[in-house]
Image 1: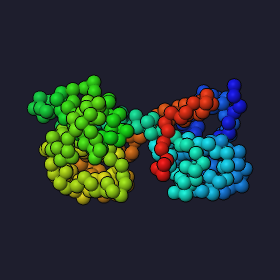
Image 2: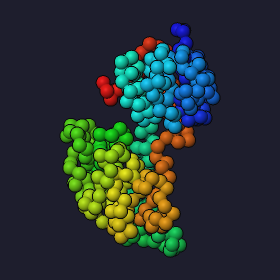
Image 3: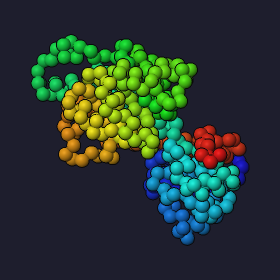
Image 4: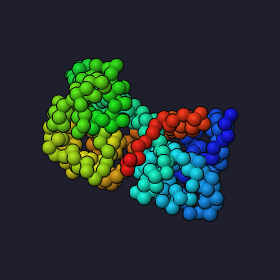
Length: 338
């Protein structure tokens, strides 16, 4: 076996033990020098500095301090950053990114692993809500009597229903569309730079944004929450939705104009399943959305949690195994300055 490389961790304390199972830790110890329970929470801490000077790789993740130029300079041997989060470089200052580029420090992320549970969440919602799951549960619980499903839920089912994807070039959107292929949904998709060929590859048809909202029985949002997308879905887009159509947001609440959304939902005209909201979850206790029968609110559970964290851990371990084998990283993330 080749000589072990040195790894330091800067990540939320206790999280590595949730990411890696015991067998995963055993394997990592076989190929790397890494101390458990030694997460760096301050890159200027003397004890951290002592470990950092010999670090070949930085295992970086949730709630870690920002990587500054000084921090990188205190890791003169650093070859790569293995991020246990969707984007590695967002944790680096601009100056640190420049240094990483100059020194040839690469970065990887677990975006592919973290997108799977979100896509599964969307698939589960799409299947259940197409069957009028929430509506029937409310009505059945209130009446506690026989309900004629052919009358009350005359349009329930998945066959031929249309699912519209907003920002279809996002990794989660692509995973979701891939998961939809075995079902009899009609999938339409929009994204600023989506091509007809890309849409077809995922079993979808490229359309404009208005068409997504106008024709879909379910609209699924996959837009990143950045200043440029704040409120991009507003009164106009929501007003195009069919009566009874479902809005599914597992991305970021900020991309939807909250006042416009609240107005539509309070009216009862459309339905929603919201794993994210604006203001940031949870909504204020007096928000009317809590008590609406046409709204399901979940506490940001779509992403990796529980046993799904082990998928992210497996992705991190795979990167280190490739490094140990002298192979290039699997989930390479391009430096935005490159």
